[in-house]
Length: 346
Ligand SMILES: Cc1ncc(COP(=O)(O)O)c(C=O)c1O
Image 1 (cartoon, rainbow, N blue to C red):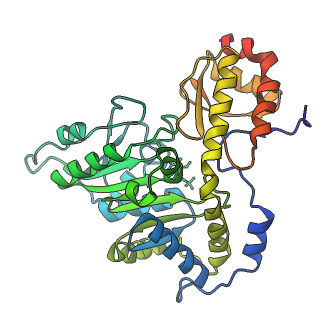
Image 2 (tube, rainbow, N blue to C red):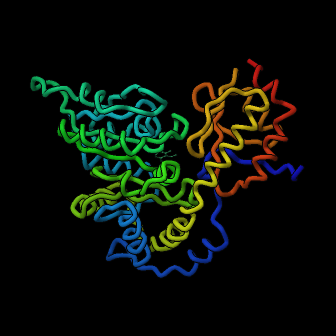
Image 3 (tube, rainbow, N blue to C red):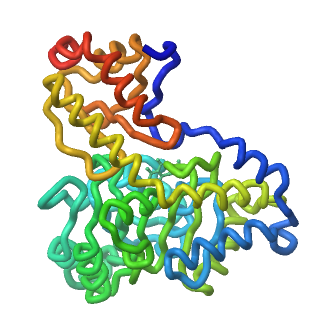
């Protein structure tokens, strides 16, 4: 058994910057990104915009800020937006859409598989314009992969159908692609295909790719120019942002390896099944494991040095670059003696 240092499966955000990343940050070429442009942030924004097939991109410190800016750009008071049930923008961003953008959320229930919504649902929900006192249906918000559904992917076909339906119903589309990298790798399609037709897309460099912070909001030149104003309004205009931009550029080097994290999650799922747990095979790097009591199971796991969080009545394991394949075996060895108790303790 390795030393008892904890194996941290709580999120793919717990990764630490690699020595190479720290060196790049220390040596980054920087400017003042509020007065003019920081050259390294500029380089990162161009690179990500190109990857996603959009005209422009804007760096933000967090995914919440990128999503919040998109909401503020797309929604006004008296508007309504749709998102799949349990989307991050609905329940985990303190209601930015309502507080700051004035939009009323409407959650669409999953259909077919966890996290999935269909064009028909959007068509029905958007309906036809009603009398003056009804909300204007304005925006469709997608999430790929869907975090709380267990990292499930929205397929390219579903994405295209949803975008086409949004157009038909005059809805704008924002895609929360915090883990779009994971979806693209799992589905074996290009990032830009999964972003096609979306008016704005947010992606995160701090989830799975190893950057200490940083997200990008991508869209048309005009949209991103306006987004830069809103970022400043929210206090997100940073000066020598190239320090973080350099970390982001290194983080992108992990893209070709991201499916390793999916393999780790699949291996872990098989091991857990062999220990008697019943669970769905993960599509990406997020694994949900139903248990009788989440607080008790979490405590038992913590006691053997395996850190997890939860979604509903399931434990959530997220694999990432700072845990390797041996760590998966190690985690299974640590929890095996407790497996029966974890499964059954209520
Ligand atoms: C799907 C999704 N969107 C947005 C965010 C927000 O990102 P941040 O924590 O950088 O604000 C998260 C964070 O986990 C997420 O999982």
